[in-house]
Image 1 (cartoon, rainbow, N blue to C red):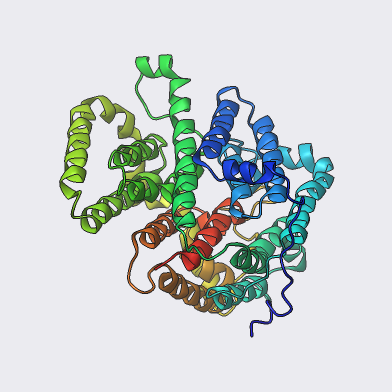
Image 2 (cartoon, rainbow, N blue to C red):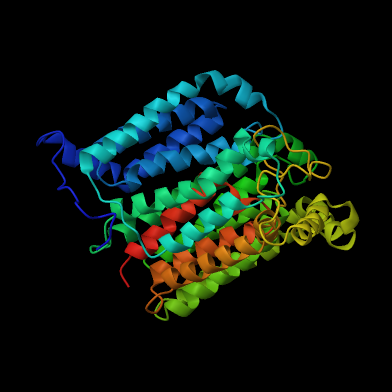
Length: 467
């Protein structure tokens, strides 16, 4: 018997039999509610009121946490808030370049009791069991490797620094706790509920990220008319990561409504305009994977898909002379980073990761190791990332981390692709692949919120999805 489910309590009926509650829950689960919350986030971007938008979405998340048994519903406003949060270059959760956010909001840390109270209320009201799911042992292995990484190399001051504890705690046992909680809270998908809701949720996240990129260009339109060029903005890599996580889902929805292919191509255009070199390169690879996915998985509508892709490609070719001035500088930067790597900080960090691994091959130097600040002068609370997930693993956790993460990768592949390949689980697999590709050149999966949080949700959903 699963020790986590032993003595399971029967779920009560909170709020009595209030007649308004079922209707409210149906609204929260509907595409209309997702659209309304996305519109709220978009308005916050337009009027430069991201902080107010995050507060409003946070209140909505807490309300849904208390009122709804479906644990996925509160994550919609939470993740939408994360999308607009990336615009703050002072946000430490995204490798900040400034410490002002900590200084400004540190005195308000006590407000964390509000979401903690909402989560506690949800657990008490709905009494779902904790479940040790298929991925639990692999996450446990990664949790141990993350926690012991760097022992013998990293100083006590570095290991117990606030930023280190945040990342080690949430990347390790925090993720394990989240996983076994979600594994019990998310029910088996016997009626297609997950297959309807998750694509809609990921779609609006991608559309919001695309909107933010397009809004950036529209707000600089007079300048761009005079001098066409890609705009530089600090959050381009985070926008690209959200877009790559979301990109496969409009292609999945195209199985029922082929015009959703245009939505996927719109997200890809936003990826290109983001100016992220990783987004451009790996986004193109992911786009090709998504197109092949729909062409191979649905023979019946294949001519329609081909027609839409051909028309869109033709339009893109016609626009090449107009778009080339935008992309010439970033192409030049990309080629320079390949052929003149001595000046590229990322490549120097890659070399340093190998050196750190060779110096401490068993447990690495730890996530909180600050010996790389000569190359990457990170600020308070942010870590010295190697900006490449495989190198981050061996550099920070050594062979122990490599073995744990390899085990986890194998388990995830088995979960996403078990018992043949359903269209929905293959879509989840492609989203994971997009995140892992972006993690080759950015912190990616080593950012606990939102990327590892989103990945954990997708893994649990893949486990609960029908074959």
